[in-house]
Length: 345
Image (tube, rainbow, N blue to C red; front, top):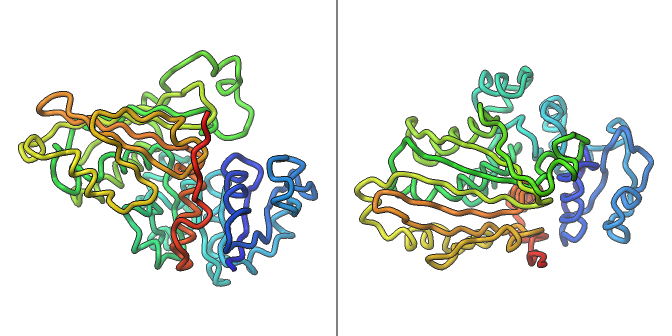
């Protein structure tokens, strides 16, 4: 059994981790931390977990995290990098759902997250946790930087095109929209029901912290430094779900290629990536509460490709992907704990 600790168990990604890990056949949840809610049974805060998680929240000081095999950080940015050195020294693996181990350039991290990076040596060894694109490195990793929800959808939508060299490096546009749970559980005016319901808007138009993450990873996938993607996020009046529409210019090879066949070949055998039949348009409700990504590729003009991607932002976009990485890190079957049929209606 893999002994698991969760730091920051009261937010949406924390409770999603609990939902997944509570029914994982090879996991024992040892500790869930929260300073504010210490002593409260987890099921009192989240009644959905009654009968599945029977331990209380504890303070970080009370949690014996060093006795765990792996610790998930479902915390604000900056928390994981403060505690990771001590955990690694004790032989504990770390999976961070925030951004502490995503951006490899510390100056870029500091620019977008407004804090100094305190362990650049660990950042250098951290592995970016997108299994479909980085499986072998994840298996050998001690530290995982779990991808952002938007970057997951954009990368999976563009990877087959980039790896096959079918698109121009610039002029890529990612027009993406997320449900309000992507903003977290904290109380903010823009996520109030009266503000977000019956509404649709862009945000972060002048620049969003997922933009540099997307470009860093697309350049890694393509193996070239001139890839440039313009990313614009939007807020959907939904609780869960991401819908990304990604556009790129096809080069001569791309214009001649069978794009549907390219995507089907790229994700053949991938349990959590579903390439839909030609002409399809995926819906967010088709992946709700699951670890599945659904992709459709279109060619609206001879020189243009359009890729539609949907995912659940809390599952494949966060906690489900983290569990997928954990399975790989401990030599378990990758799908364990993640055989989730989407919830409909």
